[in-house]
Image 1 (tube, rainbow, N blue to C red):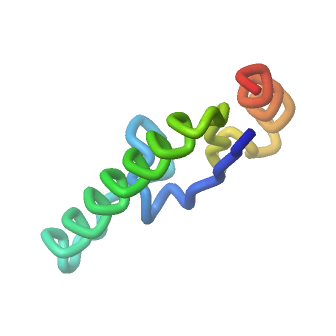
Image 2 (image 1 turned 90 degrees about the horizontal axis):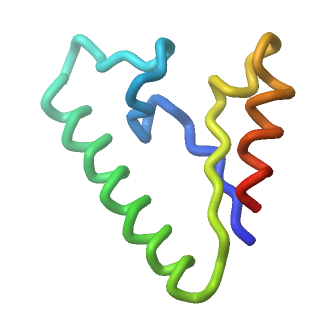
Length: 78
């Protein structure tokens, strides 16, 4: 079993209302974030290939109003 809780800023949590691309050095940040996404996908694929189950727990799902259901939904995968 493997659970991850990436920081939405550095991992570009798309669809999250809390994630925004910085207005300064935008190209640099987009390259950084996209590189992190690629590396995350590669690492996840390696874990799955080794028989691990994966779930990602997003910080926005742990906000007070959604904390219980967000965590519960993430753990159902495991």
